[in-house]
Length: 263
Picture 1: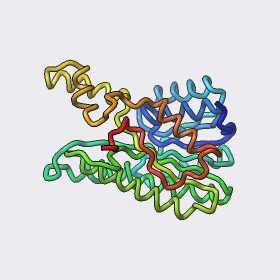
Picture 2: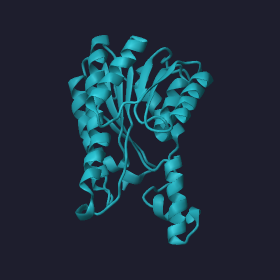
Picture 3: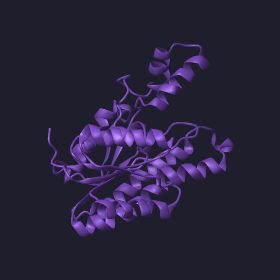
């Protein structure tokens, strides 16, 4: 299906692996030029960048902005505009996690999670909205989480940050509603990324149960389908939101969670 996005330009934060890279692939397949961002080995990142470009016939750049540094985030946006002359899509996807009881939660971990998961969304959106408003069209999609709508124990910083992302999404959407720009959030349940796959193996070993049991009874306990969300499913929703078909969806927090938040 052609979503009419060819030639557009997208920044995806946290996109050198996992969900962010899957979303970059979905956009590149539609002819969107991509700016990747994230951490990792430089040679591996270059191979990822080159492969994404070669497979899809689009231009793919990489920017190493640290999501805790507002000036670097602003530079990522300005560099994108200098390279392509436009910015059509911003996907705020960068995120980290730490699990601990509130009374034992390391302060530095709280501060870092809030900075990367929430505050970077503000800084990137602030920089991106200016050219989008000037162009009269733009799409901001924030990757929140089912944990932006419901809570789990021992994840206080992550849950607080993702709730904040949804609140920020709604407020920003109202501000730009008459300027051709939309701001929405996607709230995934558990997605089977390399990071999650590693957790499955570790949990199985620690609990003395099979990996299948870990997936069904531990990780996917909250998802009624007992199936992981796929990056392709997230990509399908993303393409709808950033296309003209999604122009009237604004300020929404859309779940892709197998029914987790329906209960």
